[in-house]
Length: 353
Ligand SMILES: NC(=O)c1ccc[n+]([C@@H]2O[C@H](COP(=O)([O-])OP(=O)(O)OC[C@H]3O[C@@H](n4cnc5c(N)ncnc54)[C@H](OP(=O)(O)O)[C@@H]3O)[C@@H](O)[C@H]2O)c1
Image (cartoon, rainbow, N blue to C red; front, top):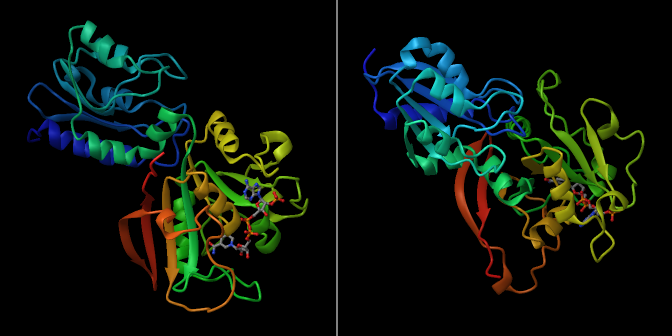
């Protein structure tokens, strides 16, 4: 096989890491490519599930003796601690690699220190190769670890005139089947799906990740979270059907904000504590407004249907904005047509304190 550059190997490692998306929490996604002394690929791996072997260990196992004197190209700094598996830094030292190239340092104080351990063992370590790309591929985990609460994506569906339901309350099928399939794929990449009790009472959603064509459930289900200050979620609601874990988060359990409703920052802190690194906020407009007003939303994914309703509730209610100067500015990062609908992805610009 022809030799590849470290840069090409890192690009491949980033693509490998992405295969673990949605399955590794509370761990990060990680990819690793091992090159022998001549730059030939002799091993590849990614972290596939929490508790499973780390990317470096999979790649080392493939490479065997050919790792000796070679280069390990890894998307995240190799771990330096014994968790459910042993430290990757020690495994790389034992395999005799000469050089380790890392994209992003590990922000987790428990696992970091791998680069220092490798250097102390005489291994050449470089950090920062394709860092921006690797960071983007692991954004939820990295953000969550750095600040202590999950990366929150607000997803909504609306008509072109911004309505989230018809005037008579019917709302289930605003967007196409293609868009709804896309949403189920998105659910499969997060650890928790969050909805307000208003949505549960109106729509009685299942909030599971499933195959829309035959109804089969995805193997891994996000935790379903109902934000319900006083515990109004009916015992026979679908979120309590046992198809996935459900947490009805009440103000008594989580803590209350000044308005007596669930304290949303405390809710996210508790979710982080429970191992949630990425969460999908699925509405409705009251809860989404409250999360946005609190500055807790990291990404917005809006599915916009080519339909007009002219009346009915809007996709978003009070988000703490009363004057145009306070409008929440967004940076558009992607616009994709999904079936007949548009999927618009945007990042809220951080406001000046
Ligand atoms: N198109 C879409 O994407 C979409 C998605 C979801 C829902 N919807 C539609 O939205 C409608 C329901 O809207 P909704 O606004 O009533 O429902 P919601 O936003 O799902 O739920 C609102 C409720 O959440 C509870 N809550 C708890 N803590 C809160 C906090 N800190 N801040 C704000 N709310 C908090 C409040 O009830 P308590 O005070 O009793 O806890 C509040 O009334 C339905 O018609 C549904 O079809 C549309």
